[in-house]
Length: 291
Length: 330
Image (cartoon, rainbow over the protein chains, first blue to last red):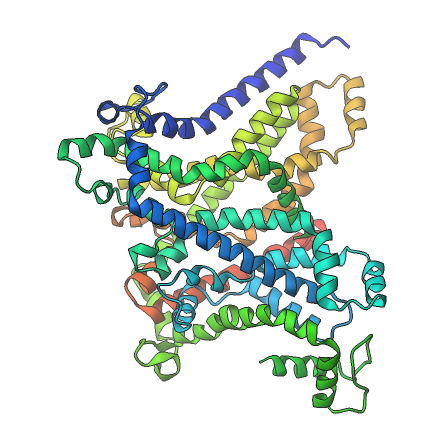
């Protein structure tokens, strides 16, 4: 079928709108990348649009990677992410398993207990007082234990466990399997796709989280990466990192330093992003259908 | 705790029905039945124990803690030892200088975000749907989803950098005839900056749900429209858009229910005392009063006000949803 003139016009208009939209979306990210490898002094003098980097310099990156608080921040963030994902997935899936069993007396009561928290919460300040009361202040565990269950994930997981045919469980029972065996050998392997999506979501959330860290941690040694980033980006205190560099050099490097820090902190997420993107999309669907 | 909740549920299911594999007969007392049930299902009890502990401590603990809103809480006296003051904290808040300011700011910021940010992913989905080249389509999707994964700190850092005097966006405004000042020092610019950065971060990601909904539209309708001589533009307006309407309705209702649930982390990162006039919202006020100025009880009272507001809106939105479109959350 030959397309008419107006059809082709329409296609062109749409394509150009999309090109402009994509450029607008991507430009800030591109700007960060080229600014981070630019020459510091010329970056200082520059203002407005930047299309190509000023030269190719990696001093800013050397500074960032040599900085002890950024390295420490990385380590802290990795710890929080790993501990949280393991704890959260374990506790949430165990509870989801129990809630998906059909003949447990107290399940309706427990379901109510859980769903209620989705509609009414105690609020920020009482939560802070509870965490403080538990003696978790100024410890990395304060970012892990108070977030041991994610109610939304719990409900989604329960729904997906319920979808697994009873016959599988029944036949395992006849073979003498108890609940932990059924959970570990049947339910979890069959729910792997859902679990993986949730773990991914949770990883990103934890990697990017900063607010509770800023509430609960006082010791700079414990700060996750995002809090160090906040110091550099929001409070603009690059001098904290530069230490002994000569004054004129400080000004030059600090212009590119914050961009290099952004790249270093964001790269891990953006590197895995293309590979996991379709799983994330799947995750949105799960939430949409069952949430 | 465990014990109480279990006996409770026994009482709830009175007269006791002997269900499935649960132990005990009708004539046994609760305690005996509980013990029998525990013996039969002890693995289930153990498996749910961590989650139960979590909910009791970290969800219901704070709910109990809200009573400090009715007290004059000081850490030295503890929650129980502090003196009751009734509704004094609430009265202070409602009669205070800032009540109308933060209330108005919260409503305006939410409504502005709703009006300008809500349609963006719908438009994007409609446009992506019209792209014929599959590779280009995939690229567009990948790039527009990306900002969603960038941390809030980085986004706000970039926003601050670009709107500083001499920054990227400030320069564009200078070209358009504006002045070269830091935009975040000017109360008039806070809402546009917030909304635009919100669109940038979310529009690609939020379009996913609409793109998925597109696949359920009956392809025969397009055939029929083509035979009737409708162009692509007409097809988009008269077939695709109506096809998305159910999804749009649900998303809109969900949004309405969360109207007062604005992300305050972004506000905290972007605002400064010179733009409190437009930037300070209820939740950022709670944060500042309670956790920066250590006005615990007052902060908790404002927090309760916010929670109740959220609850009312959610219930109302759900009610409307059920009336309008059979779709509801519960």
